[in-house]
Image: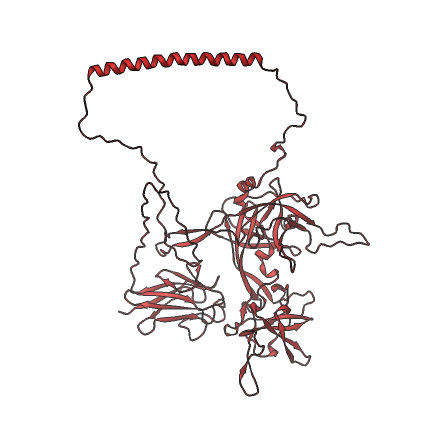
Length: 594
């Protein structure tokens, strides 16, 4: 038979195209942008695809079976929206995506393969005398294709025992019946006599107590017990009312060259050179296989970025993560941190890709540059991707390829951040909604994002009391810290074209009570002679350290159930193990809502 795999393009440069590849002579098909790949993608327009991105292997011919594996690509491979972390089976109808936001295609094969019915596991009945044991549910990795366990059937209440007799039923005579009636009347009469005597004793006892008891004295309390009329609420009340307004945010962003539209990567060079004898030696001993490249610009070590990928050697500028947010308007406006919704405006944590050292190029003013080693502790801290200065078009081949962007404000006009993923999921649900960034605060770590929804949403109430609130005030923080236990839900597919089960995280926010340790204010007691500046700006230091990464952007409620702040950071001093958390006053978010 003429067996072949079928690739139906769903998006990208060859959208709607269908390609067929015979498997008679070749059972391995490489996907990527290189010319030697079997399944090719556009080298310029589909730049989320790596040179050699993934590989499909036909493991059996009749019937046809295949697997797919990611080839350590920059942006990852996804099957039915689940990222791969190893080889997985590939079934007809599966949708493959190369990188978040990258091109998609549907896998199929000819001749058609009948898809077997998935059998549900049947639980083994437990003896009635043994207690019911809940099975531990393993948490699958994000890419798992899970089987759906059979529905749990509630246990029936135990029925009363039925006594069965053997042999024939005996006959009761008339004399026996009369004797039983006489005994019953005698027992009833005796019970009535003893009951009347006991009642008489009770009446006499109560009368004696009433005659001899002391007179009661009415005590007037001048300060009545406090009630809930002052409007204070507990963390339980806050969670019950506002859990539907607190959302989990998933994000993946990259940095784009405006001139070409290509994603930007940090340039790395091989850590090797040749000595006088021609032998390969390390350029910087013990620094690893590759070294990040920096360029001395305006007195700083600036990372060198490029629109190419250096043949897979360069490292993509971008991050993936999650945060929290809260609905401030029923039409779908949500407040969160700027470093969650627009991460390219926050200090970059992936500088140097974990390398122990790098290379610093210092221009000599004559068109050349000197080269020196740069330790990891000398990599530029606090570097903002949105302010990138050095961009190379294509791949770096020589020093002359470097192009410095000179702007007095410190911004690079040719770079721009882009959210490849910005999804919002509400508590207890599994379907994420796409969001867009509406506005960011240039002076504070706050952003306003928007989702489209057909029905009004539950929103929080805001209270700007920064000028009057005092240290020690009780607060409640809600959000989705990464350290929390995750709830995983597997669901069968009702789509006849894709029968694979899906695995989703069902977000459940944490609720943490604490208090404000310290209020940091800029300008307190300022005068012509004295200026006071807070190193963190206006904000709250919180006595809450059981939350952290992932909770960024979550609401901070006061004891009246109103949002007074936005959870933002964890702060730890060098050499100190204590970690404190920090929140921004809600006034910074309200600025974006004007």
